[in-house]
Length: 234
Image (cartoon, rainbow, N blue to C red; front, side, top):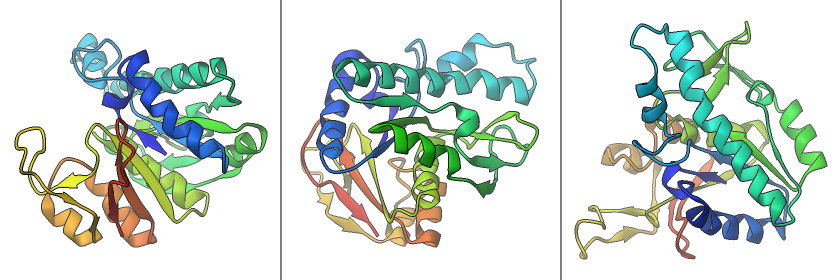
């Protein structure tokens, strides 16, 4: 289950995300992938963090700076789940098993290792992982590009041998036009990977859809604030 920044922006909003997690925990262990909380100018959003750093920072330093948003988000979500009685654990980024090259702003994945993730899942009901972040062979933080938490979600699904991932956002599926703009917007119940890629909408990261297509992982895009089935991309 992956939750975007608008689904995590404050404690009240996060309660809606937790309702979905609590439902899933009844049936299985859950890996939750999180984005940084909110959007600019929210204090921990990616662009807010980036605005705090000097333009003279190296790409490696900028990657470390922006990665703090997802790491903080994972720790806050795990803390609040613990407070409501769920055995949760915030996975350290260096244990997420996503090994990449040294392209700090748009890293390419070299290998996946599920060992630490599986170990954490064996000990907890919910493991909360920071999206967007990978690790270079030397231990440096790298990032998977803007919107990279979506990509992280399908990487974790493939790593764990899962054939479906749920991605939660503030819109309850994929629409033909922006439902926030027009009341005549129509939600798609199902799209193929290619249809989703050709739509060029910003609902899902392109690398996420492309990787899901290659690995035959279904994506169910659902609304954090609704109980609907959303849109299935398969």
